[in-house]
Image: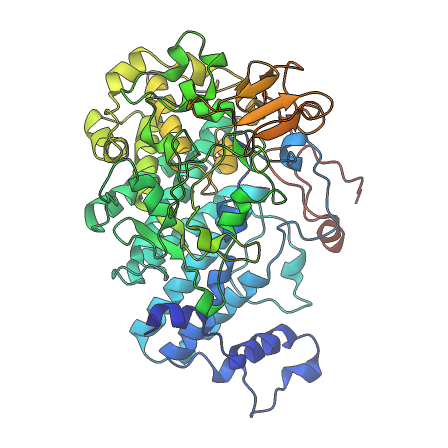
Length: 599
């Protein structure tokens, strides 16, 4: 039998579509203000739990899908083309580009008319759903644009509020936390994989407060008298409440060598760790392209960068980048005895598909760096290019809350070893990695993670070492889950994007054995391709593939393209031209973005 929750999430009846259409027309013209009584209107809807649920189901569409989760691209993942954000080639758009408000109108519509439901308990619960999504909506806007106008009611097309200036970042974030506190109070405490609950709201509060606290700390902001400490304390409190009250933990599976991989290849999200998931089921018309994304040659060709691969520790907890000559290790050598999450994130020697018996090496046809991702890659059944994958994608999971808790306390200076032992060290422990020891990390910060080209040079203070290690854990644990770009923005580390985007090291032309089995896997050449055994891939240097030093060096997906970052502009996106003009300049442009408009 079809899961009832799944069914309700996707059951958006034609009546709801009609209602949304009516809502879009209301107040556009006085003649339209009088709607025939035999049609759906806001005044005769939202009367019971079923109607509130059906309408609120539309809000879930604002949560990220495959493109916002799996396909992230920043400094730790390279693709066939560098994104505009890294190249410094973003332009000021005429409209759109994230400056859209229709979802907010739907949320405020339900909040205005939920009084039609006489059951106060039901009304509080669905108001909580709406306010969770309003908080989510505005948090996303603040991350992208900074200050934005706050609207908590429906607006007519001629409402003067449509032309108001932006409200302060502090005002917006205070409203975000206010909405989340309401959601935490009134959302159900029962765990549900595909619907927001009290625990989802606590996780979002932990996430949003951590973002805002660290953004203010590293960007040196105090707004309306509120500095970074307030938000970091709010993040700590939310994550503590989640850890102490929710009953969620980590998924441990049966084997540390596969548990991390299995968490993301499961058809149904693991409910002991996943707080909220995006459900995929082809029977319901919902699927994604995770397999084809990483296995197809025309879909971005993602690959981890060497910078990211270097950051994985050795299995004994020592630093890979402390080894002499690590920069030019052969692929099969650099993969030995590493953090088990590495071999569960990319193809390493001995890799086989979940349903396969053949050992596979990295495919340079489908990975721009050779460090080929396998996270989310399931069985061959789902390999087709026409949206075949059905494994659920995580939106909120306990691991993130653990990492947020540790980071917020470290930034506040209140972190203890006991805090690490119940957060970061649980993540390490489930894959068999040694525990992070706070005193050792602070006594000996990692030079690689301090380097401006490979790390986080803005981290200072007595907790420098442990903050760097928490960031290492966050990058490793949450890779391909949509966090990296936002993390670099809040840490004010955009300049680090101006690094070398490298892949596997290739010592020279000729045949290369990637997995150390004594057989050639790839042959690099110039001119006509040589005769090679069946199954050996040939790559023509400077035509089909680039190496950083010409006939040798690192695979270089962006050899002829350099990243460029403007510290005075690029941490926020520009306001679209149309909206600036419609408000007569009341919406001021973000710093550094010159749109030529004068008012």
